Image 1 (cartoon, rainbow, N blue to C red):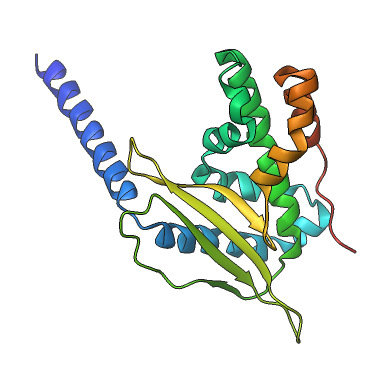
Image 2 (spheres, rainbow, N blue to C red):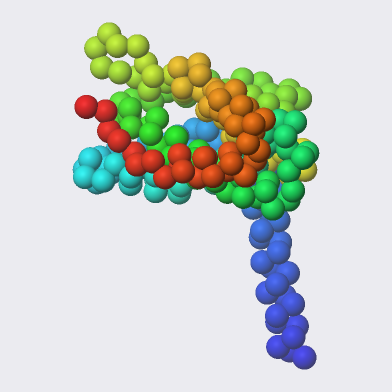
Length: 212
C-alpha cells in the first residue's frame, strides 16, 4: 500500500512539474525565445569554430540541438505541400515531414556557415496583442562597412498548446518555405509526394561546405 501510494505521488509530482514547465514555455514571448535560442546557437557556433573548420557537418549537430527543438517542422511542411496535403496518406505525410525536418537542419546549417564570431542583434520586442504569427529580425553584423546578414525568423503561436514555434527562416528576404513551395510544386504535380520525399531526403544528405 505504501509503495503504491509512493508511486502515485511520484507520478503526480512528475506530471505537475511537466505541466508547469509546459505552461511556462507556452507563456514565453517569441522575442524571449528568439533571444535565448540565438544566444545558445551563435554561442555554440562561436565556441566550436575549430571543430567546424575541421568538420563543417558539426554545424548540423549544433542546429539539431539548439534550433530544431523550436522549429514546427510539420506546420512548415504543410505549407510546402499546400493543397497536396489532403491527398497524401498519413504514412506519406510522416515520411515527408521526417525528410523535410532533416532538410531544414541541413539548410539552416549551411546558411549559418556565414557566421563565425560576429556580433548578433535581435530586434527589440514589440507588443504582440492578439497576433499568432510574428517575424523577428536577427542581424549578423559584419566587419568594416559590409552590410549585416539579415535573417528573419517567423514564429507562430500553436493554437492548441499556446507554445510559440518557429516555422520559417528568410535569409536576406528569401523565405525557405516559399522558395521550396515554388521549387517543389512541379515535382508534386508530375511525380507525386513519394518522389518529392525521396528528392528531399537526398538533398538533406548534402554535406555542409564552408565558404572560401
